Image (cartoon, rainbow, N blue to C red; front, top):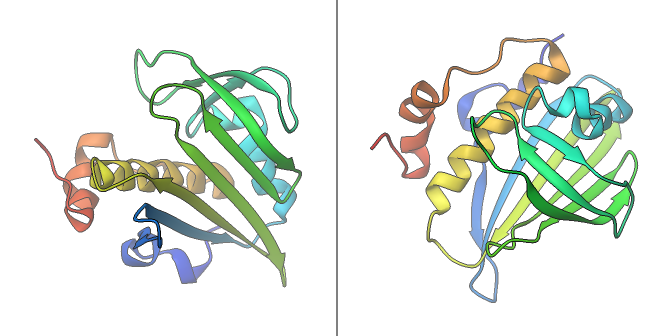
Length: 173
């Protein structure tokens, strides 16, 4: 199984960055797969599957629940406190990090004609670190694609950064 051709080239997988009326920066990614929304939802929320592409959530589920999230793809990453702001299986989840960054990400799934489209949205207060954040989410969503489709995961971070990062204005240090 492969990703929908509409989202298979690097340019099509690239996140779109826009500016909201309040000056915040909006980062939106769209990915599509020829699988039911329930399959993508499972890859997002089942600990054994989510650990393969991004990390592991430990805690109660449902809107208002709080727990810890540990990034499994970043060695030595500490557990972070998060809150599930909204949870509507298998269509929508909104997660808020409870640290000083206060990140809030929203994932929406729509299913039509045998294809599920994921829309991932992260709104940031400004441009600081935007290129790195965009490159990072791009990498993680490519890793999610590997979990959903069984395809090979993207290259290691350094190779990915060198290849994809310049398109966001990020690059190897």
